[in-house]
Image (tube, rainbow over all chains, first blue to last red; front, side, top):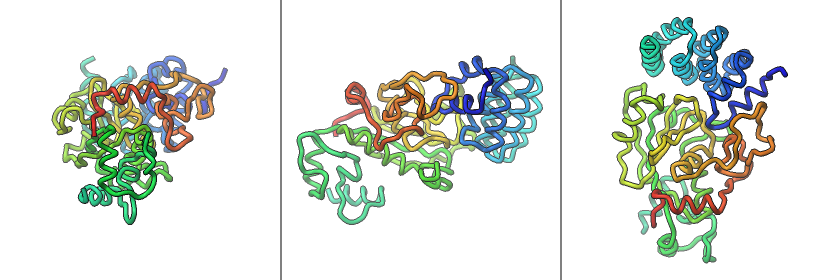
Length: 120
Length: 238
């Protein structure tokens, strides 16, 4: 059965979503919807960015790239948090961009994510 | 006694005739009393409060945007004051007052606005920047957190984090966790979950669906939840 935007939105609705379970259940099928939530500047955009980092699929990079370009700093910092977990190598370039973000918090957390990824 | 009325009025922008017990501390109705709601003397109100319980809460503003950009619950961006008032309504209806002992805007490095709950900043916040007596609760108002939740009660702590995407009820919900409450429903992963999903207890403060789904004001606490709250170390005699 096709995963819908409503499916993904609903999974992210709780105050404390179960991200690992959602990522395992939805996988890459969720990614287009996550990108949509970010681009629409949904109230769920921070959660969408975070979930994308837990999905092991090359297409997750485009979702994190969209989050890193969000006008909302909380979404950009969520992209940095998410990048820490992401197994995708191309995420490093997104972190490099976030390290030059105008927001200090985004820069610090991007640098930390980059350092933690380098230790893996 | 007069100073309490003055400070209550200033704190909640209350003017004219108001009851400290009802309008400031949030008691909707006190068992065994017939004097509320309605104007009564501050001394009478204090006499009532002596027989009841209180949560002492310290507010710590980490992200200054909480004081400058919030446009109110009607716009989906509840203010700190609205969240405190909401907490008082739900706790006060069960004889537990919420007293704001302090409000502090913390001048911390900007990256503290966003808390990685696996990193040292979380411990730094609670160990070094809470500054409150034992058994007093603390709430840190931040911008974002990892994981990207509306709010969080770090295990073992006497308080919570509240992020910028919080609902009006998130503060009351997370302090509820700090007082020992669990979620009232079990909705770990439901595809297409929405506020109408069967099993979502949207009249309960401790709903696990989403506090943004809560449909009544104030939301309910079960008798077991109230007992747990009153047994909590964070609930003290007034």
